[in-house]
Image 1: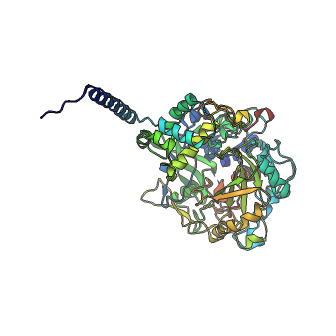
Image 2 (image 1 turned 90 degrees about the vertical axis):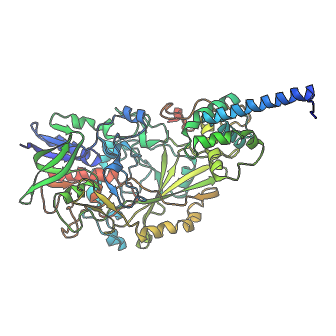
Image 3 (image 1 turned 60 degrees about the vertical axis):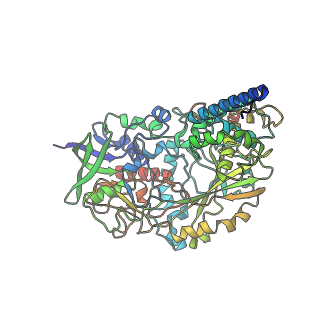
Length: 150
Length: 474
């Protein structure tokens, strides 16, 4: 005896399958590309959850900082990045020293690459990314050096 | 047929350059000086572009039998000046009298007073920025440049220890020189992005362009030639073939790995040749401060603490020099971003015959390092650090102290191996850095150090070269 699928169930199933395929394909694409930016952005977002971060700037930072990470392989980071939304709202990663260190370092580099310290560490304003902190690309960019007083 | 020169100088780092400068001032117009440098000339622009200070790998040039102990040097024109952090303290007068004062190590054959004017000359050449409100060592002249700006934690330590805490003397420019801009505290001094620290390339390159000087790069000295107790020349490898050169005076200014190795390879023997290989030991602590911001200083390392350096404790435990760091290591904690301080503790070591440079006739091109560890004297001082920290740091609002768990793997100061002394039985060279037996052979550099103080050795190496040249030329 055959069981007929209702039109409504068919449409829903097709929709769900399509979404699953899209997300699965997107994740696989990201992993194959070695895209580490999701997890880096998530770690910074979580570490600095009491600050207002410019999202576009943060994402750009995550893309630019990724290649410089040495503690964890890019492949592993991209796998972890597949689940980054989970980490943002849970404590799943907090217990690992490696991710704690990675998150702290990413937050430090993000802050010093932003305008945060140039505005006196004002925690009430939106923090804008200026460009990856690299003294060989942007010399004399130490925000604490007070070059006018040197 | 070998080329004939007045002088053959090996190496282009601090030891050689600070000898060459006064030598050229007094040399006759027709003098011929051959300089042999095993490295290439890697310009500052090349270094910045490639993110390293030498196009050659130092680890390919020697065998480290105990790789956990790293020995670092820079094989290129200008040697260690390319990668140093430009820290230029003098040694203290008591560092030269370790045995007399503390019953440890040996006394140097020269005193602080002998070297003082040469320290001052070296500081002038390096345009050192240093304290203007006192000094841990006697000085005949003020520093050529004003001090860098303290951080706020430095100010607290200065107030608490006015006679023991000072601005760090440094060749990171406080004010611009003709060839260098002022330091802007980028905090990556191993390769300064703006060329603000002194290097041989940016301040002394002209010496090697003097018409009396013939500079040969990628020239590795293999042996020293001698006849009847006199040095006559060297053999060196260049472009894949061996060349010879002769001279009336041979000056080896390679580092403490290679100076003894050249002699060993040349069958010039001494029971202590290559022995006493050593350098300082160091460890860091990170302090979370309560309500006190850091990083206001104008350079990477701003303070020098002598609170654990000299005194009666040196009869039991090693002296320690403290560096106060200003590199912005942000504290990721709301409202406490700048409330973090890194202190580096650098300990002297005692020479030990079990640490040495080994020559293997089956593999004569590569010196080997044998290292059994730092002395008990040094380790005791490191182990007592946690006990002395609370009192030492009492003036600071300490919230938490995070010690590092291990010693740094290197200080990048290779010392000992051709030590100086008055007795030819217990030393390789005399107080003027002249070989005890071969009197037209000088051995410059850190190999001459009979003991190792906590102070960074470069200024002393430079002053010793000036001292040796002054004796020779007068």
